[in-house]
Image (cartoon, rainbow, N blue to C red; front, side):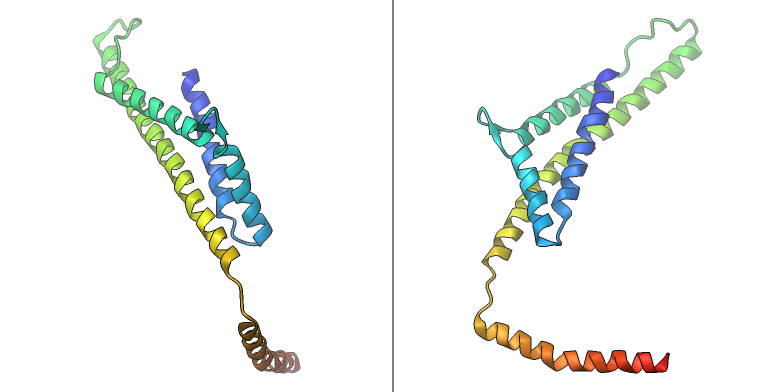
Length: 163
């Protein structure tokens, strides 16, 4: 029971927190900060292994253990005295094994999702860094802005007059 409590406390909040950090898309500083935090924590190599793959391997071990428990069924009830107790015990243990299976599968999926979102976020940041506007494009943008800006001010002035 203690292993599943640790699983719930540590293995679920960490990928959710990483996904929140990776989903920040504005302002640019926060976007880079979130991606850099996740990169520094999970993609730093320690003795040749990235921490992300350690968490992923741990999740896979727990997932394999839940498959094993689900396949072999519940153990014998040592305190059951009646047939009805054995029946309810076996149903409860089967339900517990199925619950643990789905929780561990979801956690493996979350770690794969963190890895994939991190790769995509890194590509997005690199592409945003590569975008540079030419002076002609800047002039065109300023020209469009100046064309639409007076109209926006007139519209605001008219709405104030209506009040």
